[in-house]
Length: 286
Image 1: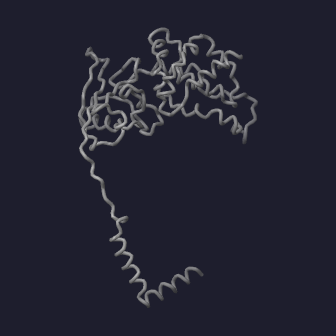
Image 2: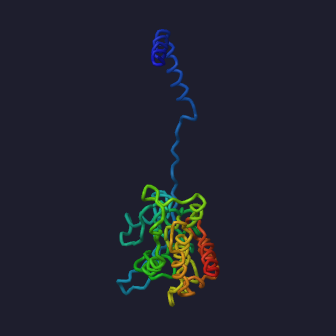
């Protein structure tokens, strides 16, 4: 019925010349309207010096700093965009990790102008010091090549806290598969599950620097936040075992001196210091 009415209105409009007049007027107004004119902003030349740490363990050469002069007009806004431009167009030997470009995988964690962060989410203009950006690998870690640190010890520590769910065998399951969780218990995991294990927090922690260079017992902020993530999960059944693992060596947890560098640099806005405090509380009351 509606379609018939529209067809009749269209026929009447054509017969009276209304339709053609309407479209002619509309086109004239659109052409003269300032809102309809799209202006493309031209990028201006802006040259920035990227001072990048270079090293290759396969050679005998000592580490050195290499400077690349980049026109920001030619690349995207993030530090990772500049690094990709350098690697693709200037120096293919430059090495660094990257993957998602969305701050999800944590691969491109590095030290930019003295602060640990993710190169893919850090704007070049936010880490400028004059006309210079200093790019270094994560601090106090063995460097494999250029901006690539060796994270083997870090990942082995993560493995030691059993970073997986251990539900009870007889726990009730929805549809025989899912373990249900209340909204309140699910809320306890907020600020924990978002951790992407980029190691920005651990490599900014002086306690972890000292431990990494010595006995390596202190697990560090990232691994301890992950440990608490599974301790706090209501679906897990081995909370006592998890706490026992952390209490085997007091240095695993208590080497934390609450310096809070970890919380200050976390690119996801998490608070590892709070998780460590919660673990200390549980160890003291269990």
